[in-house]
Image 1: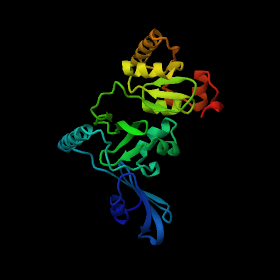
Image 2 (image 1 turned 30 degrees about the vertical axis):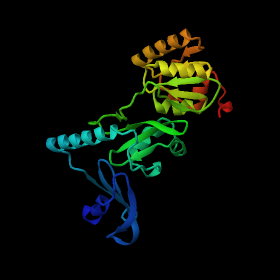
Image 3 (image 1 turned 90 degrees about the vertical axis):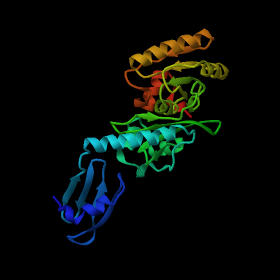
Image 4 (image 1 turned 90 degrees about the horizontal axis):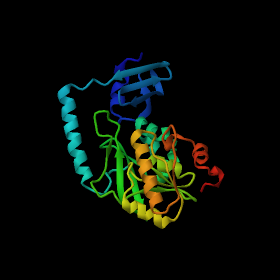
Length: 270
């Protein structure tokens, strides 16, 4: 194991989630890689062929309470503004690993992340998902990864008219969350209703769209209940609507699986 005296200060100078190649006291050349992870600081020397690791000290109770207090105040201020939090980092390869993995697990590539305008907000350590309508920002969600913090924060606005729309195709698929709409949007038109209920203003939008609708919410009790209610409401106003049930969230299916579930040809997707 490498002696921390030869590398720790270099790793600690890095922002969390970063790594770099540098020199080591074993000899000339940039043979040492140091990194700063959420849990601690690491190193690997290619000449010594040895790792180094120093974990971060655990928070005591008073430090944790103070951190959460400051975090709650900062996030409450952010939620009072329709504008998404800044500064924005739009280059996912430079984000910490955990936020990237959250999107990768949903089958969303770096290229697709950038196409959707998703970004990382370093001060709150959240991934921000902007929602636009006719090219204008109307809403945003910010997903956090701190087990002690709030999972999502968003602006305090009326959401009854809001949907996050992705893709194009002969069928509109309603999903519960934004990432599921992004994935289904690879096959046909998909709208995230940002929850499990279908507000009247969104029903009106669907009537004007004049397309068959499939309701594919998450496979839990609230999702199934919301799906049943939505299909009933859609059929009441004359829309061809059917529920879609699966064992996993839509976002955890491949493009081919999504197309198969919906009875569509993946090759015909936009």
